[in-house]
Image (cartoon, rainbow, N blue to C red; front, side, top):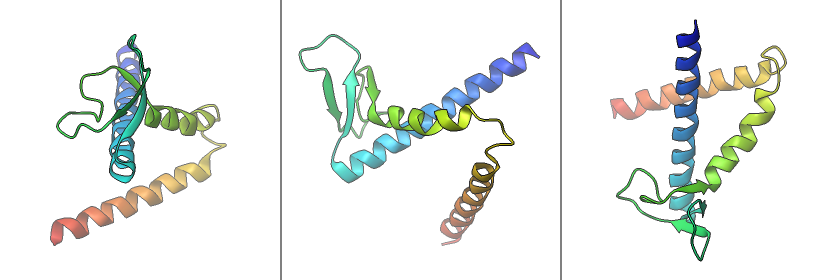
Length: 110
């Protein structure tokens, strides 16, 4: 049982990180760069990443990206509720997943 809980926690952490990376790239495409705060000592703690040849827009720098803060702000209120209390969010997630699956099918057929 302990191993299963560790697996779930690690899987959810990877989903949160991947969601933040997608939002980083969306912000970079819309605004030209993705803002973040450097977690290393530097003269300028603010970084606007625009690297397209890396896994993140920030390259190899260690940052707290604005998208990670946004994801955290969105997730915390729902994480503090019981599953019975946020049933509307669950229905929206199912509808969103169905819409995304339909879009993937349309794109794959074309």
